[in-house]
Image (cartoon, rainbow, N blue to C red; front, top):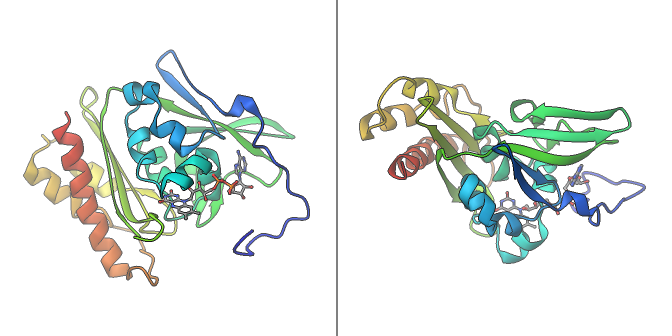
Length: 241
Ligand SMILES: Cc1cc2nc3c(=O)[nH]c(=O)nc-3n(C[C@H](O)[C@H](O)[C@H](O)COP(=O)(O)OP(=O)(O)OC[C@H]3O[C@@H](n4cnc5c(N)ncnc54)[C@H](O)[C@@H]3O)c2cc1C
């Protein structure tokens, strides 16, 4: 609304729907209410224990005021290409529970972020909950931030699942919407994580992507940053293993 991209006739405040201010865990699955603030996620002991990627990402968003007021649901629905959450949601294979006049539906993270500033939530729907696996997986999130706002010019989330020998790498800030760096992931599939395999795989973090170009960074620089940050995120996650 501030940018005049949207000029609604009616504004409905959903801020006091208490059920949507929540973080709970059941059967190894975590459910986060859409109205949960970044600060509540950053400071959640449950998430620190069961899904440490989320507090790590939350703590890197904006500044204290932004983290106190901003919500994980608002941020995901807004689908800002420079937002931090989409990288974490894609890397964790999160699921989004949406409600509307046609009932409830669940959308996988890979289908949720549709385009720049466009998510799968329709105008007559609200996002209720985000579901992520409770995980002992080894994780890391790093970003090269725009200094004034903290928004990502290139942010990368890495999730290593040693039991399943799988690696998820998701990138935000670089393209019109966040994406999984599938070429990086396939390069690491089946191989030991070493400095050399990580360095080779990270070089592919912008393969097949059409990077954004704006006053903050050229397309070429963003592609370069995606590779640098992918290497750092993988090294960070591997070092925690
Ligand atoms: C100065 C500044 C710095 C920032 N820095 C960062 C940063 O470093 N990283 C980052 O990721 N973000 C950053 N942000 C964004 C911030 O994190 C907010 O989350 C974001 O602005 C959305 O605000 P909100 O959560 O209050 O949602 P709102 O502004 O209330 O909502 C955003 C949009 O989503 C819709 N919406 C909200 N909740 C729901 C729901 N449950 N169901 C359906 N639709 C919904 C609204 O109608 C609206 O269209 C920054 C913002 C500012 C102002």
